[in-house]
Length: 46
Image (cartoon, rainbow, N blue to C red):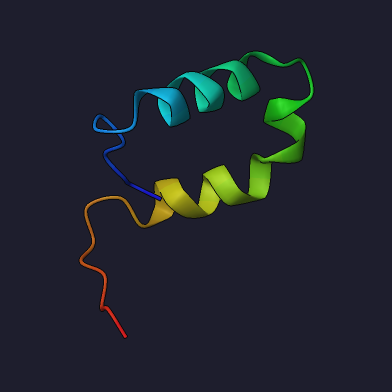
């Protein structure tokens, strides 16, 4: 969620490949919607 993974190129590559899969949008629809609804909001670390 709103993470900068630039220092982890292998993770970025893996995530990019996952997002290319035909089923990605349907499976992650709720999670991606939640992420979009919290964009720009501060998070509280606990």
